[in-house]
Image (cartoon, rainbow, N blue to C red; front, side):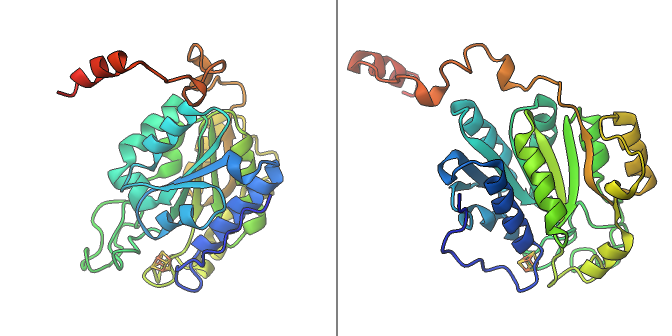
Length: 284
Ligand code: SF4
């Protein structure tokens, strides 16, 4: 159950992504699965390197496409626990369409977004999560448009699991990811993961000052979608914990006839030369 490998991450010292990696490793161990039962699929960005740093199956995909790969994998092999991961640029800019459709599809994949509100790999440009007025080399006069709101987006897209963590609170983050893996459907987990090199506004101290833990709100009911939306709007998205969960909604794959009996990975795909040639004709 040891999900550590011998690859040394090349993130900057202090990058929030280290804790996200550790939280995923701990959560997987806590759930009781083995490395060969987990696949971590990532997109492009500093955060995309994570699939190489965890002892499991891994696939470092292309920009914004971690989710299509992750969903295909889950459909091919129901026995794998699939975690997709990437940054806010990956999931909320080029990959936003996949994010929304994965949410509404409710396929059993855990999606961990490392949200640092900037493009780090390309040396600090404004991302869809940068705040209005945020100055970088791509918006020297300050970002004109407001920041994308991932929690509201997930809730209104029909998400059955919405949570948010902070990489500095690894205990809470581990518990959230563990719950996400155990959730039978799509789990959307946004994580504030500071970029210490390029984002000098949304720092660890800034988040410590602004975040509210839902566990500190007396009587908060995370099974109530309206209450979830209300708290997210009131706190301007600066909350951590499980924001909303519907444990009763059927997952996508549960509704696919034959999925449980013979997933693609277990099907006998042997075919005769004649059958193979017929298949090839489609590509000629
Ligand atoms: Fe992390 Fe930012 Fe460094 Fe990338 S540039 S590794 S996001 S601190």
